[in-house]
Amino acid sequence: MLLFVGSYSAGFGNGLRTFDFDLQTGALRQIAAVEDAIDSIYFALSADKRFLYAAENVSSRIDNPKKPGGISVYAIGKDGAALARIGSLALAPTVPCHISLSPDGTKLAWAEYRTAHVGICSVNPATGMLEPLASVHHTGGHGPNPIRQEAPHAHFAHFSPDNHDLLVCDLGMDRVFDYRYDDQYRVLRHVVPSRDFAASPGYGPRHLAFLPKTPYAYLVCELASTIHTLRLSPTAAPECLDSHSLLPDGFSGETKAAAIRISPDGRWVLASNRGHDSIAAFRIDPETKCLTPGPISKLAGSFPRDFVFSPDGRFIVSAHKMDDSFATYAFDAETGALAPTGHVISGMNKPLCFQFFG
View 1: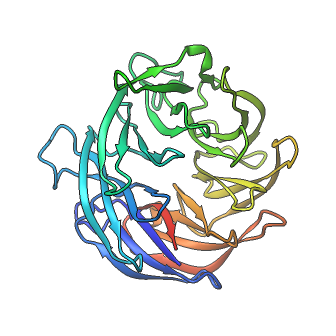
View 2 (view 1 turned 90 degrees about the vertical axis):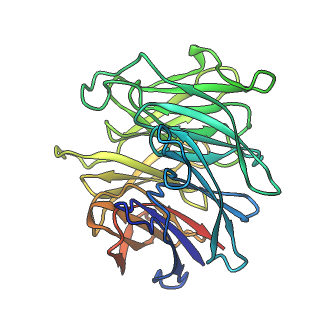
View 3 (view 1 turned 120 degrees about the vertical axis):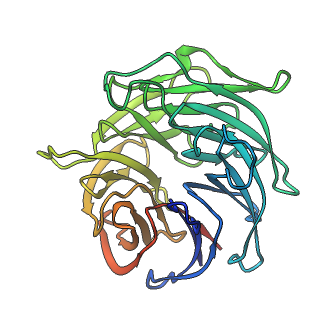
């Protein structure tokens, strides 16, 4: 099994590397690197596994100094290890912090944090290449946190499971926006404000994780370090069914929530804490889809910006961004607890994102 790992590159490249992952032990071994990949910070993999999309700094390949942030398209070799960049597209003033593919694979959505740009591109299924379709710029709003919410900050863009709407988490405005693409005029239209989900002031919505084949999603709020069960509706705003803290009782230090993932078997949802340096597990009720808090597992490194389940659900690979490392943890599917395997990769500048392949 292969694992693609993206990182900040400190201007020296090698921001995208390929590792061999042992599904029996969780051991990792680097087998390839893209030398001129700069700041590969989020991935999306095509359904047919022919193309890897990476949000990157594309300034060295695109003559557009106003838009160094963009997306590169990589053709994946037959063995998965060889990545050949076949195109790069400049889109935003900084590297998009999140990208995702629509359920039908025909569109790619992106969100850029610093200046709050959001957009979609069309995807050519034969060549994998992208064409910009529409974008929007969030302006004018802010939240109560004067440091993190002084302006809009788009942090996530993903198509709804029914493929009709684009849901955008804006950390700065405490809102999950509902957009729809107008094919005739090639624009993204805000459906109606009443269809948005309004988080509590100062919570800072960051990412959603969609429970497959259901109208349910889980929202992680970065600034409040909370997780929320949302029931989605095609005609109304999402309904919040429950809310939980990601932190242990009595914790008072500085921390920020980050990634959220659903286990491959659909029984657990996990979210990471940067500062407390942990991953909190919640059991999903099979009937109501609401959450029951499970263990909060401390990690062996600091600042888990992202983590990912192995396809079989037996392991988690977590970034230790501030330690320039990432590691494998065994996941107990009965209790939700994590245990370090001892397999650690060090010396990779600020690892940020992961994508399994195979």
